[in-house]
Image (tube, rainbow, N blue to C red; front, side):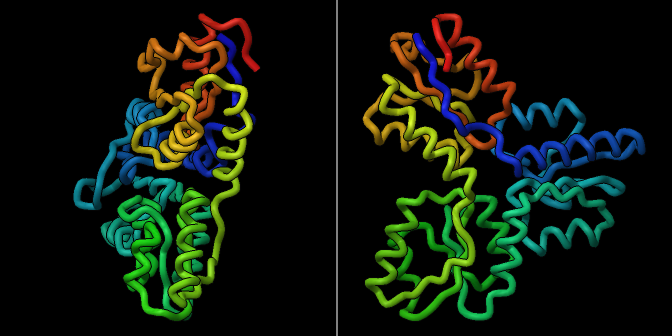
Length: 280
């Protein structure tokens, strides 16, 4: 088996920054003998969350689950404004690991003067954070949701990892319905590069291994791209989940979602390499 690694994959800068923030908070909390919490999953990665748990960081879903004094780490996807205020009003310290791009997009939708929409996966933590910055914004997840809007102009913020093809369909259909969408931001370039890098290796691969967790939207998008190519594609969350079938292919392309740590990628590649003669 030959392994071909995508030129862009794994941790993006926002995820790396979030993990650094969490480790700094854990260190500070230990010195002061206080508890450190993380609001939800800091990123969608089982491996990362297991690492945070090993540092003594407790996962919570709301302010009522935590006890003062304590440090609360805000996940990379951000949180709604009212939930941030709930933590502050109870006296918690905040370690803000929100991706700077998401913070910027929250501010953009907050300041939008006209009617506002959010284009993204309904229920995704990033979309919830954006919605929490502008409660009257309508969430559009697909072209079918445009029936929630009347003809006219709308300012829109976009979930940073939203698929380009789905965005194109929404904008095309909106134009047909007399809906003008003014995008205030674009798709995160790290996501774009990761997808393009995957497309670059698919033609020379007999199968594709996508490393990451099944609750990660950008990881599942990579898996979908690989499957749409017609090549066999497999989601691998750990070395133990590598399917036996994967070893039957001569050339396997390797990519990883934005929340997949290097240690996980290395472990999967190392196990696959036991049956490989080359890695490029």
